[in-house]
Image (cartoon, rainbow, N blue to C red; front, side):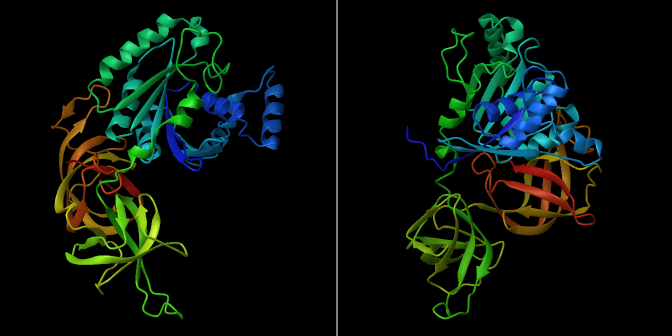
Length: 419
């Protein structure tokens, strides 16, 4: 399969405290030679001071602990690295139970999630919690890394037992692609290089899986959705009559000459031209940022959506979302919030809490209506005006919303539209 050298893969890491997440990320960066020389020298010196014979790989990520001790709140740390085959962004989220919201934030744009399991402990509550959130966020690919295989003698049976445990509960979840890799992040087995100690494992090491993961089909190419972010009127020579609608294509494909509908007005037109930067192109697709012009002079502004005539999103004022509450302050039913959806901004209220989910047991609780930090619940929302929505399972961009507290301007919740 041909891999695009510029193709970017976003992945999130999740695991319980001390499952070796920092060591795994350190090993990926170290063995793929993605660390600056001065950074490597500083960490080697720190490792020696601690009396360690080898480099403490966890130090590549654990500089954040100092910042936490200084009272700086860090939700998600993003790390970037590149190999000859692909570019990567890692969303490193804390493993503690109280940081459910962090995983939701880090995983919301991820193509893949790496879930770490300690080979000695097997599938625990936190594993189920992380897998449930990955399923809820419709992350297309799950890679389950069974870590610390060196501490169970690299035993194939220990690995197989965990695979069975994970598959038993994940069969209830909506996860399309699950892969299992036995690793030792500390020793480097099956992280970047194949393990000589686990000849029984016939699969690829983790980095190879990440480099060759097929993510082109993760983007919805069928439902054309283009939310207008701004209107471009250059008013300069050669562009006196130019009126371009700029934004990022959420999904689908647009071609010059396509018949389109502008929502919410419902006016129709045809695409006259498409520009990507200075270059005029005949065709554009998600997730490109473009400016397009239409053949008719229609009143279009930020928050409008340009779609295909025969494929339109639902326009709803009241709808259900699966919501994760992100804020320290509990939700106030009936209170007004600012709802952000693509480039559209509306006032909205939480009309009703339908049920909360216990993400350890997956049970629904329709009695408890209080929304506190890290709670996940099905909510009814009413907006001031119609919003152009797709179910989240069909389109992660046009199926997601956030709520902002009008008083503090803090993001208080993230929601996924239920179809």
